Length: 151
Image (cartoon, rainbow, N blue to C red; front, side, top):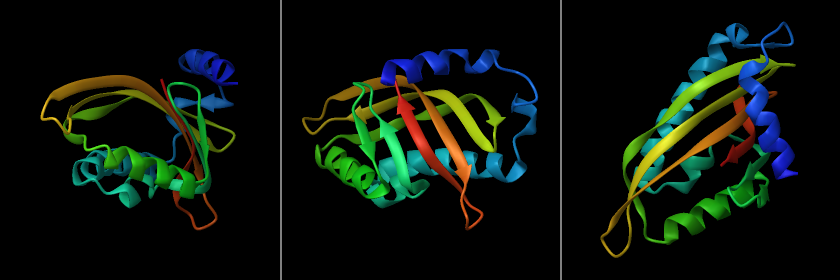
Protein backbone atom coordinates (compact mmCIF):
# COMPACT_ATOMS: atom_id res chain seq x y z
CA UNK A 1 0.00 0.00 0.00
CA UNK A 2 2.76 2.46 0.91
CA UNK A 3 4.55 1.73 -2.39
CA UNK A 4 1.41 2.59 -4.37
CA UNK A 5 0.98 5.77 -2.34
CA UNK A 6 4.59 6.79 -2.99
CA UNK A 7 4.19 6.07 -6.71
CA UNK A 8 1.09 8.25 -6.75
CA UNK A 9 3.06 11.04 -5.06
CA UNK A 10 5.64 10.97 -7.82
CA UNK A 11 3.07 12.00 -10.41
CA UNK A 12 1.43 14.79 -8.39
CA UNK A 13 3.43 17.64 -9.94
CA UNK A 14 2.49 16.44 -13.42
CA UNK A 15 -1.22 16.60 -12.69
CA UNK A 16 -2.39 20.02 -13.77
CA UNK A 17 -5.95 20.37 -14.84
CA UNK A 18 -9.35 21.43 -13.62
CA UNK A 19 -9.66 18.43 -11.26
CA UNK A 20 -6.20 18.97 -9.78
CA UNK A 21 -5.24 22.62 -9.76
CA UNK A 22 -2.36 24.32 -7.97
CA UNK A 23 -3.76 27.80 -8.54
CA UNK A 24 -7.10 26.96 -6.92
CA UNK A 25 -5.84 26.53 -3.33
CA UNK A 26 -8.18 28.51 -1.06
CA UNK A 27 -6.41 31.37 0.75
CA UNK A 28 -7.54 30.04 4.14
CA UNK A 29 -5.97 26.66 3.32
CA UNK A 30 -2.69 28.29 2.30
CA UNK A 31 -2.65 30.29 5.55
CA UNK A 32 -3.48 27.24 7.70
CA UNK A 33 -0.78 25.12 6.05
CA UNK A 34 1.89 27.82 6.38
CA UNK A 35 0.98 28.39 10.05
CA UNK A 36 0.99 24.66 10.82
CA UNK A 37 4.38 24.14 9.16
CA UNK A 38 5.92 27.05 11.08
CA UNK A 39 4.37 25.90 14.35
CA UNK A 40 5.55 22.31 13.76
CA UNK A 41 9.16 23.51 13.90
CA UNK A 42 8.47 25.55 17.05
CA UNK A 43 6.55 22.70 18.69
CA UNK A 44 9.38 20.28 17.92
CA UNK A 45 11.90 22.65 19.49
CA UNK A 46 9.62 23.03 22.53
CA UNK A 47 9.14 19.23 22.66
CA UNK A 48 5.36 19.77 22.74
CA UNK A 49 3.68 16.68 21.29
CA UNK A 50 0.17 18.13 21.65
CA UNK A 51 1.13 21.11 19.46
CA UNK A 52 2.83 18.81 16.95
CA UNK A 53 -0.39 16.86 16.36
CA UNK A 54 -2.86 19.75 16.78
CA UNK A 55 -3.49 20.12 13.00
CA UNK A 56 -4.46 16.45 12.56
CA UNK A 57 -8.03 15.29 12.09
CA UNK A 58 -9.23 12.84 14.73
CA UNK A 59 -9.07 10.09 12.09
CA UNK A 60 -5.81 11.30 10.53
CA UNK A 61 -3.25 8.80 9.29
CA UNK A 62 0.55 9.08 9.48
CA UNK A 63 2.68 6.83 7.24
CA UNK A 64 6.27 6.45 8.42
CA UNK A 65 9.34 6.05 6.20
CA UNK A 66 9.31 2.27 6.78
CA UNK A 67 5.68 2.03 5.61
CA UNK A 68 4.23 1.60 9.11
CA UNK A 69 0.85 3.27 9.51
CA UNK A 70 -0.28 5.14 12.61
CA UNK A 71 -4.05 5.74 12.57
CA UNK A 72 -5.93 8.32 14.61
CA UNK A 73 -4.89 11.53 16.31
CA UNK A 74 -4.54 9.83 19.70
CA UNK A 75 -2.16 7.21 18.26
CA UNK A 76 -0.18 9.89 16.41
CA UNK A 77 0.11 11.82 19.69
CA UNK A 78 1.41 8.69 21.46
CA UNK A 79 3.95 8.18 18.65
CA UNK A 80 5.18 11.77 18.94
CA UNK A 81 5.41 11.52 22.74
CA UNK A 82 7.53 8.39 22.33
CA UNK A 83 9.79 10.12 19.81
CA UNK A 84 10.27 13.08 22.12
CA UNK A 85 11.08 10.76 25.03
CA UNK A 86 14.11 9.50 23.09
CA UNK A 87 16.01 12.59 24.22
CA UNK A 88 16.69 14.08 20.78
CA UNK A 89 15.94 17.79 20.51
CA UNK A 90 15.35 19.72 17.30
CA UNK A 91 17.93 22.51 17.24
CA UNK A 92 17.51 23.84 13.72
CA UNK A 93 16.13 23.38 10.27
CA UNK A 94 13.06 24.10 8.24
CA UNK A 95 10.26 22.61 6.20
CA UNK A 96 10.08 23.68 2.57
CA UNK A 97 6.80 23.58 0.69
CA UNK A 98 7.66 22.37 -2.85
CA UNK A 99 4.13 22.48 -4.20
CA UNK A 100 0.45 22.04 -3.58
CA UNK A 101 -2.67 21.30 -5.52
CA UNK A 102 -6.41 21.09 -4.94
CA UNK A 103 -8.27 17.91 -5.89
CA UNK A 104 -11.87 17.13 -4.98
CA UNK A 105 -11.79 19.69 -2.17
CA UNK A 106 -8.61 18.32 -0.55
CA UNK A 107 -5.27 20.12 -0.64
CA UNK A 108 -2.23 17.99 -1.45
CA UNK A 109 0.95 19.60 -0.16
CA UNK A 110 4.41 18.17 -0.84
CA UNK A 111 7.83 19.30 0.20
CA UNK A 112 10.94 18.45 2.13
CA UNK A 113 12.55 19.05 5.49
CA UNK A 114 16.15 19.58 6.49
CA UNK A 115 16.50 19.27 10.25
CA UNK A 116 19.26 19.18 12.89
CA UNK A 117 18.81 17.25 16.12
CA UNK A 118 20.92 17.12 19.26
CA UNK A 119 20.86 13.57 20.53
CA UNK A 120 20.79 12.62 24.21
CA UNK A 121 24.55 11.97 24.07
CA UNK A 122 25.21 15.54 22.86
CA UNK A 123 25.95 14.71 19.23
CA UNK A 124 24.24 16.75 16.54
CA UNK A 125 22.85 14.86 13.57
CA UNK A 126 21.13 16.11 10.47
CA UNK A 127 18.10 14.53 8.92
CA UNK A 128 16.25 15.24 5.75
CA UNK A 129 13.38 13.82 3.82
CA UNK A 130 10.32 14.44 1.76
CA UNK A 131 6.67 14.59 2.76
CA UNK A 132 3.19 14.54 1.27
CA UNK A 133 0.38 15.90 3.41
CA UNK A 134 -3.31 15.85 2.54
CA UNK A 135 -5.47 18.54 4.12
CA UNK A 136 -9.28 18.61 4.33
CA UNK A 137 -11.58 21.31 5.64
CA UNK A 138 -13.38 19.95 8.70
CA UNK A 139 -16.95 20.60 9.80
CA UNK A 140 -15.69 23.34 12.15
CA UNK A 141 -14.16 25.17 9.16
CA UNK A 142 -10.53 24.39 10.01
CA UNK A 143 -8.11 22.70 7.64
CA UNK A 144 -6.94 19.41 9.14
CA UNK A 145 -4.34 16.82 8.14
CA UNK A 146 -6.07 13.63 7.06
CA UNK A 147 -2.98 11.89 5.65
CA UNK A 148 0.71 12.54 6.19
CA UNK A 149 3.41 10.50 4.49
CA UNK A 150 7.13 10.94 5.11
CA UNK A 151 9.72 9.31 2.88
